[in-house]
Image (tube, rainbow, N blue to C red; front, side, top):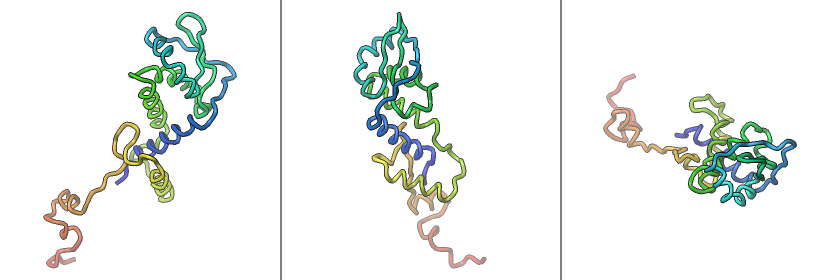
Length: 175
């Protein structure tokens, strides 16, 4: 059984992880201005190099204010998320943890919702893309993307005594 939301999150997360490493950052035509708390400023000073490697060029612009001059290419279509991404990357105990959290959040937003009906071709495309992931078994938040239930487990859940009860019809049953 596949959790389509968790599977799609994993696919999108790995795509974002690849893109920010492969695509050059984009310079914003109008830098984004941000106000940072003292704690965020301290983390910014410690993480400036890592942020630049991720495509975020941030510079001081007055007391407690900063401007974002470049962003990772994958954020180009989402200018409203720039502030959230910067502040998110300044949270957590380390940049690596904070950045994984940011990418997981960005992957979650557009992911197919649980229970959303999928056509056979779309479902197959989702499974094929999941199979191509480096870590296909869990979403970026750690939830499983796939559960495998054996015949014994199915029999137990349907209140049957054994595997044969699921696989073979009873000889005494009349239709």
